[in-house]
Amino acid sequence: MALIDRLRGAIAPASVVRDHGPAVARLLRRLFGPRADVDDVFQAVFVEVLRSLPAYQGRAKMGTWIHRIALNVAYQEMRARYRDRGRWVADGEIEEHATEVDDAERGMLRNESIRLVYEGLETLDPRRRIAVILHDLEGQTLREVSETLGRPLQTVASQVKTGRAELARWFVEQQKAPRVALRGEG
Image 1 (cartoon, helix red, strand yellow):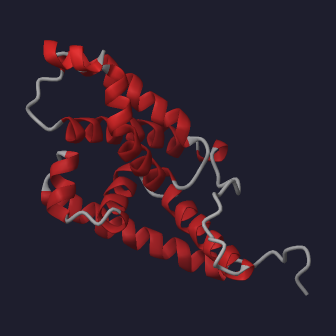
Image 2 (tube, rainbow, N blue to C red; image 1 turned 180 degrees about the horizontal axis):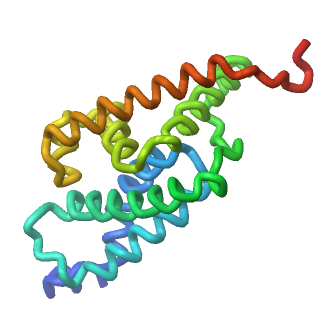
Image 3 (cartoon, rainbow, N blue to C red; image 1 turned 90 degrees about the vertical axis):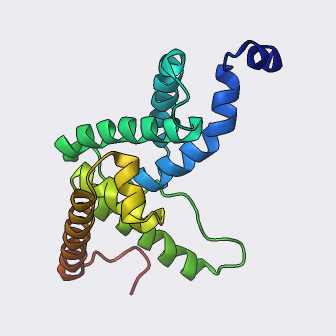
């Protein structure tokens, strides 16, 4: 069926999700952290992609077009969460990133570090957060971030610089905060 659709010039929705879903999922995990609720945002991205598919004119690569839609949907979700920070705090549902080779202590420290990074990122304004993630976590240049987001280069540079500074201040505050002892700590 997909071959018939391609021969007719139509794009099969199932192939769009199959071909671009893994890249969107990776992007969303970077933007929101390793959280289970990314599935809802993933679905929202592809609802928007499939709704907009008839209007896709091929001016940009499909992957680029979908990436932009994913960023827009993620931004809207971040804005909603940022406005109501009380309902969305780190809930400890961090995926296990330690491999079998890692010992338990290293795995716990790694998960704690990941949790703290994403907890800090959640405090940033969504525009700054996306710019910092694309630049620092995704490894895009400032120019690439500017093109991806459709923002002036100086704006992106400012958002990354300000976001980093806010994140650094947040980490300093976390270090000053009294640490709660975990069960079993002596």
